[in-house]
Image (cartoon, rainbow, N blue to C red; front, side):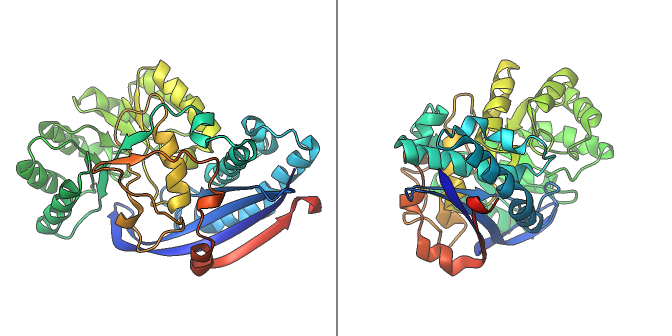
Length: 377
């Protein structure tokens, strides 16, 4: 039986700040979850909430509070009610009365899956049904101060072997910089991500992006602007990619009925865990939509789990989950995620992350901890 949960709040400086439509991200604030059972077997996962509630309504502060006061106690009571017969596929029973807070729920659900892989000595990738042992990787380039700086960043990514470039865009920093990159690289697979920063009145500008033969335009409008998204998609040849808009299989059905997009960016850490990711992926596959796995500037813990998700059947485009050294001088895995060859990364075939977590690095980057015995709930 699982007996203990430990939360670690970390702060890791990014090598290069990432500028998006919502501002600059200069450090990765992460919450790591460690579950420990009565035999010392562990499960690890990462809560991917960002420092500010600009991507979704969750942020690291709220996630910490919700985990400590609401979710861990619920998980503890559920685990104790089951004894040793724990199946991570049924963990949502413990959260059935919780609304929202998907990133916080995901951290516990994924830690339970990680523990189950270690407990049964099976690779987590095998348990979840991963179809490949390697995945292709794309690079995300933040908004730059100048086109020259942008081109330098794209040049470096191309030289390193990344299979696709995704540019962050925002009103006023869009068409000219896309033009500059496309002029230099006419055949480079390229996409753009607006993080919901445009409005329906910007439709003519977005329609003009058809000329650049992009793989997709990601989340041009806010997540709940479904009718505007559908109207824009109807006017475009380029597929729209939905990220923040899709939180469950219901939104997949809505997107299909309205014609609001053709591609989905699916992140287990945003959707509520592996189980919910699998349900959404199944719905998108049945609907004929393409899917892929984006990133949240994860540490190695979240990155390893994300790469497993990227290897699932139905994931079409390169993942954003590149080598750790692109983001951090030092990571929290003993052997940080790296290229197997330029542009591809091996999918972790580990039976849980416990043997691969660098405990000393976790301690160095840790700003707060919280420990609870399940017997106390």
